[in-house]
Length: 285
Image (cartoon, rainbow, N blue to C red):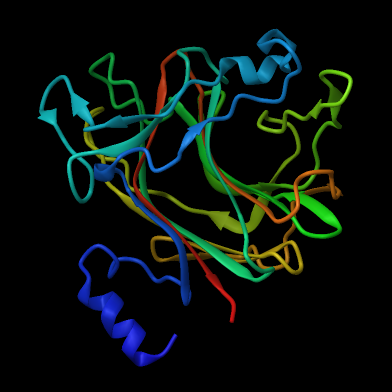
C-alpha cells in the first residue's frame, strides 16, 4: 500500500482504526444492518433433524445496542449497533455466525475487528469466569485442500481462569447426513492447543455490565493454508506457520472463503460476543 492510499485510510475515522491490506473485500459496520452475517445451520438432507446434534444449539445472530439493566443503552464502539452472538444458557453451549463469500485469488487475507464479550448480566456479580471462549475460524478451499484454521481466546474453563490464545488442527471426522451430504462438528472442547507464549490478560471491567472494546487482527495465507500472524491489542501472537484442520478439496467448494465467529459459555448463563465492526482485506494484483 503506497503513501497516498494510507493517507486516504487515515483520513476516514471509521477506517483509520484498522490496518487493512491493499484490497478491502468487505467492511461491515453494523449500524448499516446485518451485512450478510447469519446462523451456521449445519448440513442436512430433507430435514433439519438430520443435522449433527452440535449444530442444533446454535442461535441466530442479531443487531444489538448493548443495553444493560443498570445503565441503559451502551451502544457500539462507533455508532448504536453491534453484531451480537448469544449462546443458550447451558454450560459449554456454543453459538456460531458466519459470512459466506469466495476469494478472487489465492493470497494473504487479513481479518480485523473490534470486539468485546460478556455473560448475561442476570446477577450483580462480576461474572468474569462465565464466558468460556470467543474466537474465529476461516473455512477455505483452494484447488487441493479444504482447511479450517481455528483461533480462540480461552477466557475460562470449568470455572478456572485461563486467559490464553489457542488453535486447533485436529477434529473428529466427517459424518454422513444423507446420501450426498457430509458434516463435521469442530466447535467442541477437544483438540485445542495453546498458542506458544499465548497467555494474555484482557481488560474486563469492574461490574457485570461494563464493556471494553478490543482490537484483533489475524492474517492467513490462502497459498500455504497457514496462519501468517495475529495480534490482539498490543500483543503479537506467535501463530506464524500454524495450520488448521485439513482435508482433501471437496466438490462444489472451489475458492471457498467463509469467515466464522463463535462464542461459548462456561456456566448456565448466556455468553455474548459483540462485534462493533469487521474488516476483511487481501493482498493481490
